[in-house]
Image (cartoon, rainbow, N blue to C red; front, top):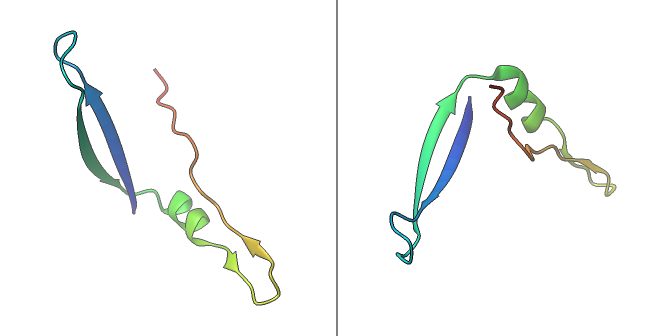
Amino acid sequence: MIRIIIKTERRIVPGAPIVTSYEVIEIDAPAVAERIRSGGYNEDGTFEVSQVISVEVPR
């Protein structure tokens, strides 16, 4: 399972403060979850760490 956290910022009228809200969506994506979980740090100083750096939504 992957937990996606979406941050939304809104300004309802010009000059009003920006209101920030967060939404959490959980999805099943076993291949992505496994890839992110794999790797780690070794005693000899080597490591492999994966992270999601961008998400695109095709139209």
